[in-house]
Each structure stands twice: as C-alpha cells, then as structure tokens.
Image (cartoon, rainbow, N blue to C red; front, side):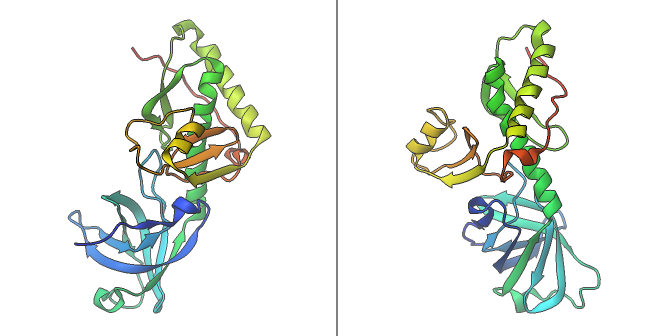
Amino acid sequence: MDLSSTKLDYYHDMWKLQSKATLLSFFKGEDGRNALILDSTIFHPQGGGQLADTGVITIAADSSFKFIVQDVRSKDGIVYHYGVIEEGSGKDFEMEVVRGGEVFLFVDEARRKLNSRLHSAGHLMDACLEEVGLGHLEPGKGYHFPDGPFVEYKGTIPQNELQSKQHELELAANALISRGGKVSAAVLPYEEAAELCGGFLPDYIPKDSTPRVVKLRNSAVCCGGTHVSDISEIISLQVSQIRKKK
C-alpha cells in the first residue's frame, strides 16, 4: 500500500474534537480488525505514554453509517483507525464507492480529557522532581498510562527519606495545580526547542528536526501528545508510591 504520512491535526490543535478528512483505504487487518486510513486525523494513536482516542467516524454521503473507533495505532507515519461498523448502519460498506470521499471524525471528549489529564500529570511530576531533590528524568523513561502512570528518575535519595519526599512531591504538584497556568504547544527549530527544554534534548530527537515543545507554565517538554489547556484541569494529583530501584 503506497500511502503518504497521515497529517496529525491534533498535533497543532490539542483540543480539537471534530474534523473532516478524506478516506484513503479500508481493509481488514491480519488480526481480523477493520481499519480505516485517512489523509488526516484528530485521533491520537496509542504511544508516547498516552492511550489511544476512541470515537466515531461517519461518511458525508451516508449519514446513517457509523464506524466505531475502538483503537488507533501509528506505524511508519501512517495512522490506522481500528473498529467496527455500528450494527444497523443500513447497508454493507462498499469501500469502492466511498474511497476518496469525505468523512467526519468525532473524538470521544471524556476519553480525550482523561488521557490529556493523565499525560499532563506525568509532565507535572517531571517539573516537580528536581524541585524536591529527587534527581532528574532518565530520557525515555516517562510513562503516563491510566493503568499505572509512573516516571523513572536518577537520584541519590536514601531509602529512609523516600516517604517524606513522596509527600513533598505531592504537595509541590498540587500547589502548581491550584495556581493553574496556561498550557501551549509549538513546533520549533531544534536549537530553540533545546533552549526551552533546559539546554538539551534526548538523543533520539534528530538535530535537523523541528521538535514540538509543550509548555506547562514555566516548564517545557518535548512531546507529541495531547494535554490540558490549563494546569488546573488536572484537578489533583496523588503520589501513591516512590520506589527505589537498584
């Protein structure tokens, strides 16, 4: 299948929940799931410490048709929307007829907000770790999935101080949440992005690239995910455990 990379509409507008796109392909994958490929999408695929969006895709030419998006994945720049055709959509989905046609995308708002809150909370912890003396983030070691969001850091805190540091971290994070602060995202030249992110970027980001930097109040991080529009939308953060490894 010769397809160009999917345009990521959420990359430039993190809070956009509805959009239009052109249908490029429909097929059944090796695992038996139906998959749609579009020229652009507002659905965030699973990855980068964030679960996939869910929602609905409809066809402009047939308002009775609904494709329920259950999972979204990205491979080699192409975004795959996996799901099922809603029962009772009215007719068989003849893709030869609608391929190249216009479709409407609707992201589940509650799911997007939850994912964005959890993802943003992980970055908020990043901003607070050094503040309370717990070390610095190990590049590529941040995870913000709802079934167990956590981050891995390098530090030299004695075992007997971890519990008190856990309390300090929670207080520091919630103090930032209570004060709030706008969250923004921008695609920047490499050097400018590095300067905003403390003077350097992880090795896996090419030096000739234009990274996307998300700024949470005074903290900046290179990230391609979706986030809250204001830190106060995280609502609250509870640090359940700090565990020493090795």
